[in-house]
Length: 92
Figure: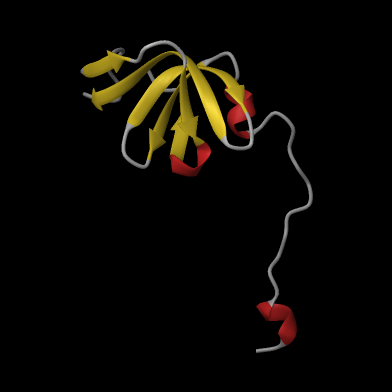
């Protein structure tokens, strides 16, 4: 194996408006390390995201259903650490 194949490759081009930023102001669902969160994404920084009208989802039900089977509202805006986020998207 030569030295070139051992080097890490980097992507230097960034797409604007992709990732979490794409969902600012929209209702999203975040699958995190231990819980599922849902709410309106109101802020994103290097460490966390802020959800307003947030809830924790204890039972999803069918993903095609319009409502969660069991989602409990969280008090006020809610922060989720980016280090815990596994996936996210527009869901329910």
